[in-house]
Length: 535
Image 1: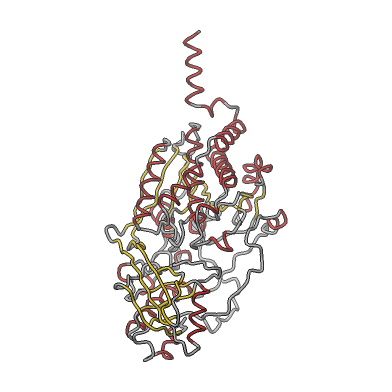
Image 2 (image 1 turned 45 degrees about the horizontal axis):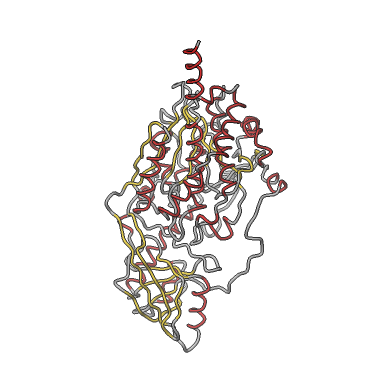
């Protein structure tokens, strides 16, 4: 009898989830582990305070790739690995400064623009305000830029916020999201991103040919916020001239002075480094192994990369930490799901969802190359979702559901069904235990701009959570104040608990979530439309 009692106790210690009666018992265990022994904020602090901004292929991102894999291993996940895909150059800031030296000395708030080269020491020169947003603007400035630091943005007049910078969603605002939107298809509409992608290199070449020494743009936000975003990370696209972004208030001061007889002189120092040791970026993957190899897998993901004006906290150490905490919770409970639960920390999301797209192309589905030879040379994400036919890979049916976290550190309030109305009742059932925590609504409306998008485009049930915005859009997103201070611990613990529970429900569900049909080339929504002049 003593031996039998010891064996029974061992089972309880090794598999606490198995000691509970069904899914509700497992939910209670998840809540207990996630709220009473959470590590989510320690994870977020390491990614932000210790590692900092994680620009793709930078030394900081390499540190994050290594550390997150080790944490997955420490927590007992299996199949932990980094999957490579071609990206380009790494880049990091060592130091930088900007100041006006005439008509008086003023230290300016500035940041080098990503993937632009260093200054050779300090560049000191008078400015010229020469706003240029299209190549047709170049003619106006020919012969006027030699030896100058060129301010290329319209200064504008400033703006004051009209809404509160910090927001919690009301029930009414969430309900308004529950509107099915019919898809709109336009024949032959050009990809405006292609135009935006080409212009920085055309601008750099023009300024170089005119003898300019450097260029400066205005920050997109007031309030001394800086971003420093740039996209010339391919080895054959490195600009020739150093470039910086100035705080909007500093930029406008310079522009006003340039209209007087006190012509401003700037000093710029950009001490940056390129990193070419490995042109591959890496997605970090880890699994909780399922018991039925034929049942497929469910997946949760967040992007690990960030910009470097701040520490990449809300965007998206918060989401990465929630993904990792859900993995830790489920692994600590030694759950034995029917389906494998896979956790992904994506790379290069900020440059166009490149990491999740690389995973799709390798494991899920492919699309043909663009028939235009010039467009075929572009990164895979340009026009990818509009090329047909889709060719499913053998792993297409294996991925039965994907859940994405990428809206800051606000608490989960529900799930976007992303137009998959057949999945709504199932998702509502999985969220039902969390109504008292503020998460109860499943809405029909889709979301865009993050790593579930390309999965949806090949027929995978992919979902984004509704989250309280907090101050994400007003001042945090991509800026120098995206630091740990703005993360909300209670919200992140709640999000990790809900994610862990939803994942386990999806992994153990008798039937996988309803899928959308494999997309085929759509017909134009308006067959009688005429193109506009800018098309």
